[in-house]
Length: 358
Ligand code: 57M
Image (cartoon, rainbow, N blue to C red; front, side, top):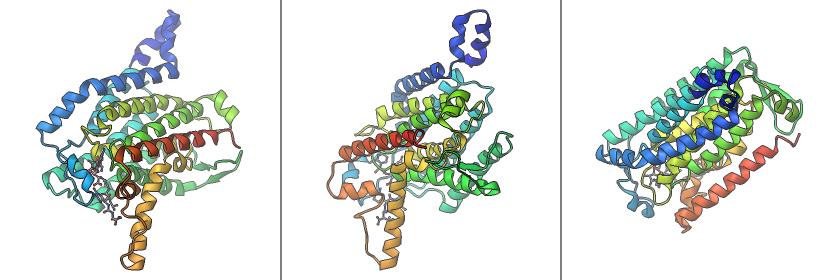
């Protein structure tokens, strides 16, 4: 809004030109979302408590018993602070901003549906896997269709480490993109099992994508770093920054010992949008590096379930997803969380360095 209101005034008063800069508005968006979350958080959590949105806790990991009653659906706080921040700082005429917001709200709505259904049925029984999956696919399909319709759309995959080698997927880009978004959404959901475990790597991923998107939208930087140039895409940097700020504000309350959990409304929306950001900046395959923590958690479940069925009851991990394995081995929760964050920072840096390694 500030961009649309004040940037045109820069012609007469140069001071207003500051509103043109994506870098300035991204910083402002991050700070705004962070401050709003921290200010609104306590009232919001009290409101969730009043609505009796307490989390049902499984009994299989004893250490989690103390978490009973912690309010969930904190993802709504992320959505609120993100939305207000975007309203202030994003170019509201930019199509990519609206598309990305649609993805966040779309996946968030599927998560909210699941969260509300779990609350109604108490025993943690949400909507059926088929309904959840179907709704996720529908949102992803619409989002990719919006991209597809854009003349700037390119069905070629950027292959890391190669200067000019790309892989044209043609129409297959559509199912590939849907898979990427739905997988990312569910992977973040699986990771969301310890305080701050999902939001930490999500913030780091949002910041890494902020850099990728900034470069993608800048003719000079993209030419220098040999990444595809997409006019207008740089604006999504503001979205990433607002998401990182909203995530940090949420972490303020979700940090161990958590006062609130994000719920599926948070995990599905963040995961889905991270998948979409990778498609937008044409760094589809790099998502696996930026989100390697989410990939590892998901692989641990696939391996555990596969091995269990194959051997008729044997396990690779004490329990999947991976964080439960470490918990059951006696590693304190906060240590697991911080180590996963450290790995995630490392992987974010590796993903960024791929920009130069071609
Ligand atoms: C959601 N959610 C947490 C909270 C959060 C196929 C199978 C591997 C699925 C998996 C599963 O259901 N994963 C998805 C994981 C739950 O958190 C709520 O859910 C929201 C996210 N969807 O925002 O509202 C619990 O996680 C803990 N938590 C925190 N801090 C946080 O900030 O401590 C969450 C956020 C909360 C809280 O205890 O109640 C969850 O785990 O339910 N299932 C599992 O992860 C189960 N694993 C399992 O059954 N493994 C088997 C097989 C199937 C692979 C095996 O290894 O043999 C475990 N879940 C739990 N306990 N809670 C089993 C042990």
